[in-house]
Length: 185
Image (cartoon, rainbow, N blue to C red; front, top):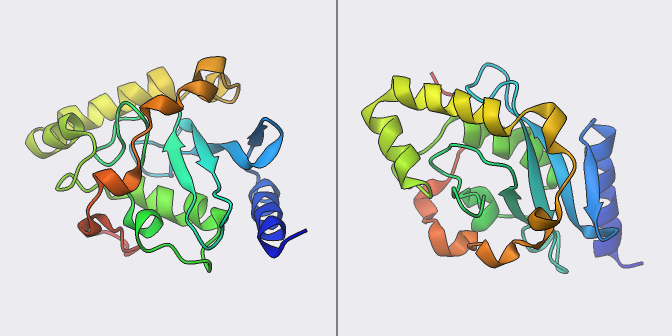
């Protein structure tokens, strides 16, 4: 077994040991769905999303591809493909990062501190900048409609085969989209 295969197994095991629900796709460890809970004290609290993770053969030296499977309203998540604009994954990835970093740090930071200046979802960004109260209400509505815990962890056939719509993160993000991990005010 190669060191990359061992690392892949170890990272997936870390997720499961930290109470993440992980469902493999086609019984392989390079494609799977992870149940992700919205961060506490955020608009997304109480929501649960399926995150599709695809690990390249060169993982951890090459970054994973991640996307939201169920709908989420967020300026930095593509509304069609679920692709995430997150510089730390797209351009600044390091083998020192692991899957747990994505789910415990990077995605929570993305949801807590959206960047409407460099959006993948222009409608969400525009609404956020023009009418924050309406944006907040719409985020909560999306959580209620699309991120209910009881509905999210069983993938449908369409979710496993809709890769044609995927937009690569590198094609849609600029280097200014980095989330630096600093706490907000």
